[in-house]
Length: 219
Length: 323
Image (cartoon, rainbow over all chains, first blue to last red; front, side, top):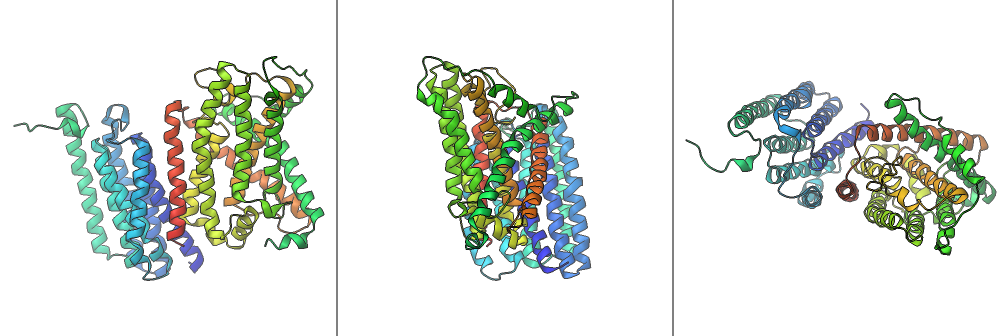
């Protein structure tokens, strides 16, 4: 892959990761959010793939394939199964409304850019310049975790954070070792699977998928 | 690049601008017809022919002029002001050639304010007739416009950071010279923001339903309810030109390939054809999105536009950081 098309691919895919993070805040339709998350996973896989093609690194290419499969299709599929049980399939009661959370996200993203200015100063390579986008995605994920009350939204916030961390790792370290990435991906997969079971049993016990409904302990 | 204007010659620039004007005056209504056709086909109907808006304009032009006795001069002038402001914007923006006449003044602020002045003229006309619907439409259109115009400005500003200039011909020709810019994160953010703004500015489905005349939902139609005959034709032409202009502008800002950068007449013709193809692709994409969504409640529209504005702001910030 030539130098310029490599950095273009990298820029486009990292940009797509950030756009997807913002879109998850913006849409309230959980089905749409799951599709956006799947698109984000694919973009992340493309980032890893582009880096692998650039560095001719076989292990990284394998990592990219794992990311593409796990984050692009397996995890979204698991989430979709939970979403199907949520009545209405919408995030109905965020703690702060959508315009306010969008404005909050823009502040967080600016904060992420400012905080990672020391990192970008290290090198002028395309991958280093794009690292703040990963940090920004992590912060948007935190915002989703804090402000959204549906269990599915909580899982999505967690995945946003994970995708952001993975993006930073890919861009800055030119690929984490395959074992580490495999471990992290499977961990996340496991967490989503466990959360899915929890969410489902929560739904059958309390009849709701809303965290605010869980205020007292049950013995 | 701007210095190229002197070498290209004033005559050629004027020719290019005239060509742009003709292309958008004919193309805008055709794009509207295309949107109606796509929707009809998606709903399993045959739908009116694509040239239907042009036929409507011809029919309206041959009708008698009627004014309510309660209207003032604003009502008569507004359609002309709308068409004229859009026409100036079309003539000076790089749509077919990167050297339109007065290209040096085609700053993105100038173009946005030309578009805005057309909207303001129409809103004043809506208020002027003194009917309840007109006033309601104007107030709604201004509410939406007040959110959409800044987003339009900021989204285009993100592109000007890369080019180092807020001059539109400069932005387009330097994008042409650096194809690597097209795939950058700030362009992606800005593209999504501009699409949202263009949908709301042209009154398409998630924001406004152009085919409804129900008082609860209409925005653009409410303002023009009192118009009839040739003046209604002018208003419709102005709205169609604005639609064509905005789509052509977005197409050229993000995908500038095929625009004529010399003085070769064949290049102009090719540029026109390619511009047509690009806008048709863009309009088809937007209409396909519109088909799959329902119209938003008016109070939800600011949410959509805030999203557009935030994306635009982030495009600027990302552009500054990842430069």
